[in-house]
Figure 1 (tube, one colour):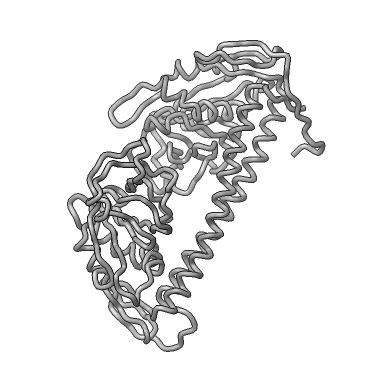
Figure 2 (cartoon, one colour):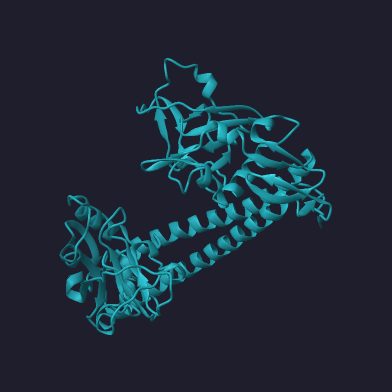
Length: 439
């Protein structure tokens, strides 16, 4: 980090230039260059369909995030190819990784490799770029690529195939970028890196809280609060210890399951929200701001209307079994690919039941049921038979409140992250075009 604080000022001495089909204004002293002018190498990786635990780490498109990081949550090791000089494909800190093949929405993800792994290489779906020292820095290239990705520029120049899309090497090299003096590039990168570090710190805090939630959930949903006497019961085919006062019930015994309404989603506000699988976050939070609308008759609306405390399950697709919790009264209905569970037993708390659907106890069963089906789906009969440990109602509410408090802390952190992301995007727009200068 710089010892002296940055000084920002608005640039007024501008010139109009053409950048990738758009007229933009940049400072008069800045240049416009093609990617090809500021790099020494653009080299795709090699394909490998084989795996080798004793082989070499090969970074793939899932190892590059949309915000410019290399992540190694999951990685593959492949055999060292015999027909290639592996030294030609080894990564070194400062390499720019450009994702040249992916779905059309993710195409163009980019990151600076900072030595996240030793002796590692990259697949043919990634192009390695090495910049000219003294002309530009890797971060300048990557931040500009991120901005172009946010503007969906890579979608415009993509070559589309069935199920995926690609960027030709010639099109990549012909991309035009604004180029400030080197020292200004470094200062801009430092400003943006400061925001990135703040985002990363929030991410680490969220991950820590989510681990706390998982551990707390697993303990509370089987051991309860301040219990000393336990019994062994069978729960969905597993032997589990739960407090003596608890019972084991099936979801179908404590609530009513119902399939959703068939309609077309609409952007036009009809007054009735139309909840879909894709509107449910992995955490079970419903993203109401994204939920579209639908047309529905008064009779059907009454039948499918959502209410606070409803739990909805995805019944098909890769996320079949995922549950969402309706945390407020809303003028809305749920789509046909969802199944609603409405708790009808007065000794069961809807929020407690929802948290059970977020636990390993639930997912172990749901995945086993789902994967046994030809189409990998879940129906109401299957859900109805899933067993849940049920404490007395006051304890259910206590457990749900503890987990809700953790969730609220996580959501506050997520909101902070979203705010930082918006700030980064706005700052990038100003600094990468020179509208705001830094010295």
